[in-house]
Length: 269
Image (cartoon, rainbow, N blue to C red; front, side):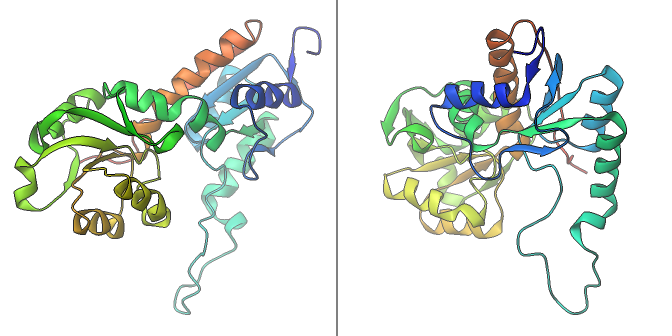
């Protein structure tokens, strides 16, 4: 540590030690000074404009998001009638960059590494699931006493504090007894990650409690006989980011780590 400050490389070294492996390609310093020394950081699920402004107002030097900094979807549409602009020039990305530069922020992303450290485990803990039926790591299937699917829905709503959640199943599945639950947390329930879903089905999963899912993933699961409960990307991960913040505070007690709660980006109309 540089005096009473922590450097970005030292922060990364701490997180790699906690994971027991090097960061993945999409992780690390995404903006700002890769060698910066800091005594105040802000964690968040995504470095949205609001999160960055909160960091600026609080005087933090580092922002630690879980999700990507700039919104640059893979495979942007090339359909001729869509007149788009380069991703870096999109207003949302320009606004984020302006705040980062104005506030002299350094952005250090930890994604899959934090999933392994605590995000998956905290989601399971939030749901009261701790009996491993199959799999390991972030590909575990958790066992519950035989429970009607409709009752599992109510259990999940209470656990995540959501009045309404999306459900995908056949009519007859509402009374199906389920006892082997898979947790496609975050975006692992999306069609782009369907291989993860398929792996859980192969291991004998009979219900999903997910973060975010899309139509293709819902259909794939339901046709495979696995009814689905969707919470949201954020609801399945933010509790784990809060836990990660607590871990960083314990690892570096002289550094101030605040957490910005992004909340859920959508609401029921």
